[in-house]
Length: 398
Image 1 (cartoon, rainbow, N blue to C red):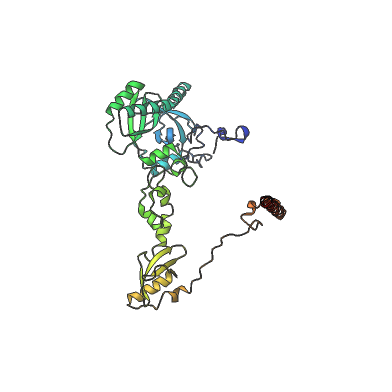
Image 2 (spheres, rainbow, N blue to C red; image 1 turned 90 degrees about the horizontal axis):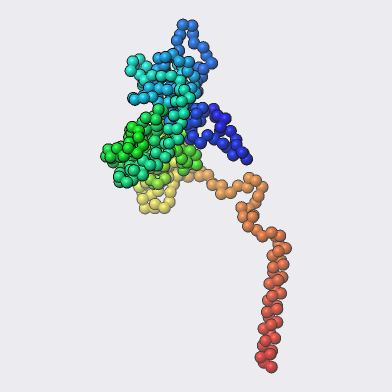
């Protein structure tokens, strides 16, 4: 799927197009859909679907109607209808798969007011589009300076130009409502274009900017994740994670999206699992649950009078004791059940590569010979010092 610009460059270094997943060939985009119907011809009498999918900056995709019956294929640069003027984008999907995508995203393909594809972009359209793209970083920096001068509590994270250069959309994040009327006036005067402000969430900002997560990989939201489901602290509780906001929060400042990945597995495993607040009544005393291991189906209990001694019980054993407690029957002790479970010993170090010691590189070179020579030198120095002291004493006595 990668393009030629992603190949290896000089001295084995990757070249890359430096477009962060929005390259011109659509090979590195996270929302790229493989057209598995491209090599199949339509049945006789069937007309191709008259909608196409067009992608713009930062994976923004929209559907446009091909009313001019243009011969479009994936990768074509087209001029599309906008609220005023026209926009420039790249065709990412054609044919029947567009109908499937529109159904999935609940977009009506029978609407007569659907936006249309004007034409294939000419070289003049592409040149204007590229000039606008080149100005985006400079304008974003200048817009941030204007917002700081006006003391607005907001952060402008990205700028997107319309294809004809007549309009720019500024994406920003803010904790509270921001009155940016004066900001729009100042930016319109400074840049000479129409301004649109669009507020996005912190997750969308991280998706646009990208980065490396605590796992060492690129952020899920900027590589493959397309929808942002709500993440609550209960997801961490189900997985028995410590409620440390510094570890559970991602670069966006919100709870990590990956907390939801294995949540369903934990919820299914906990359906027939005793609660963390389970109490067991024994003749030796009341026992409380201290720790659980969902996948090994084990629980650790300790007596109220002896919290330092933990006893391992299986899930079935705990349920058996609870059934007896419901009948107002007490078991003799936890030890009677805990003896049946053999706890595996942890392997601290295993010699898998043939070396015996982890500190083998700390030994001095030469082994025992160097130590013998050092001892001999020390003994000689001691004897010399003794002889010197004797001679001094003899001179003093004389």
